[in-house]
Length: 129
Image (tube, rainbow, N blue to C red; front, side, top):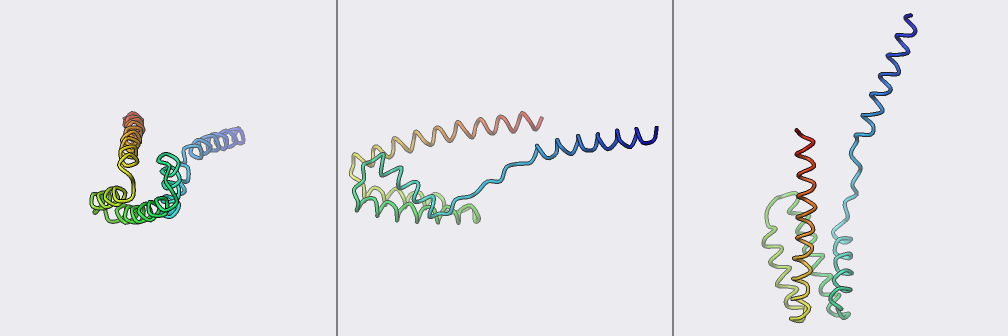
């Protein structure tokens, strides 16, 4: 009888442990500022039909912005100034048509990100209850 109890207890502990393993959060690999800048530049090159000179300058602007945003994450200040610098840099490099197209794309991306964050927040708040 005692061995049945021990076996049952062992199975119960193993079963409970298996649930705790499935509840672990996945590991998120954070891209470097260089990777972020490269990816953003490639997307902008495709979307805005940038020439070689524009691509190089946009890449520099994106890298500068990505580095500033990395600092923002740790220091929690300066993101407005960083974004304004990015906008003025892009305005100087892009044509009026390209800049307007970028603004429309950026607004679209911002809307999608907001929707995604709203879904995440609603899911988190429902699970917290």
